[in-house]
Length: 202
Image (cartoon, rainbow, N blue to C red):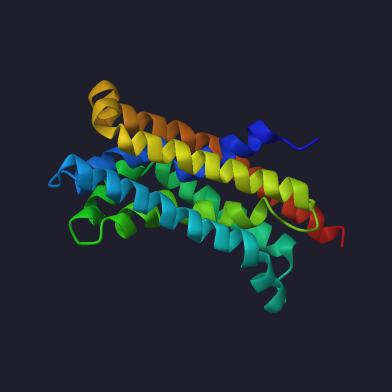
């Protein structure tokens, strides 16, 4: 049976809506409320377009390059694991991406849409969770809808960012980001093991 909850948790971990809050507050601090809302909506929309692109053509690109999905799943799992380790042991998502905020004017695109929301991990997840050999069209549609749901959660949290940040603080966001890193590390190991199993069963 298709795991809706597991898919939601997976996307929630790689997109990390909570970790986006401090980034959003930092890069929009000089704007008035109306502009902040416009930036949040634009960032979410750009992220949705990017991730949808990977859902639709990600596997086609792999096929064109003659890369087995099992190999991509193993590579993706390794990258996700490294990404998770950086969330757990290194700088947390808010700390790392706040450093990018001062170097770019178009804050809706960078660092909000990429790499904060549509992170490399989210792009990999969009491909891995919509493989044609593993999931039928209805399951892929469900995955895409769940991805959009997480993006809507991210948008809602950005619109309520000031209030939420006062409640949990930067330290709270950092702790949640590290917990998501632990979940993501477990998912990454599972992806590697599944890829190895699939590759040697070919």
